[in-house]
Length: 143
Image (tube, rainbow, N blue to C red):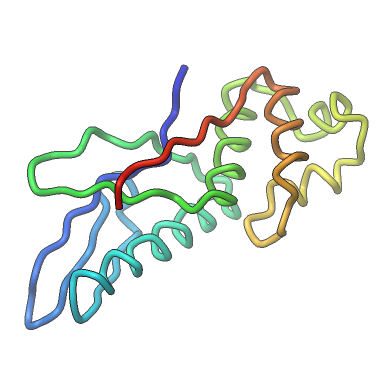
C-alpha cells in the first residue's frame, strides 16, 4: 500500500496575513506576511505537527486528495522517513522490541530512529523500513 507525505493545505488571506491550514492535520496552523513566507512556514508547521504526533503516539494520517484551491506541502525528507517508519510499524503490528530484533540492535537504537529530533542516518532508516517489508520512494516535483 502506497503512503504519500504530500499534504494538501489551504492558504487564505485574512487581515493582511496569509493563513495556512491542513485538513488532514488540523493542529497544523500557521500564518505569514505573504505567500512565499506562508509556504515556507507551512512546511515547518507540518513537520512540527507530525513530530508531535510521533512523540504522542498519535496516528499519522494519510493525505487526502487536494481539493480545488489547495496546494500540496511536502513533509521534509528526514521527518518523512521517520513518519514512514511509524506507519510501517503500525501496519506490521509489531513492537519496537521486535523491530530491534530484526535489525539486531537495541531497543534504544529503534527509539532514536523513531525520535523526531534525532538526526538518524538515512541508510539506517532504510534498513528499518526494509525489515518491515517497506521502502521509501522519493519523487521530485516542481516548486
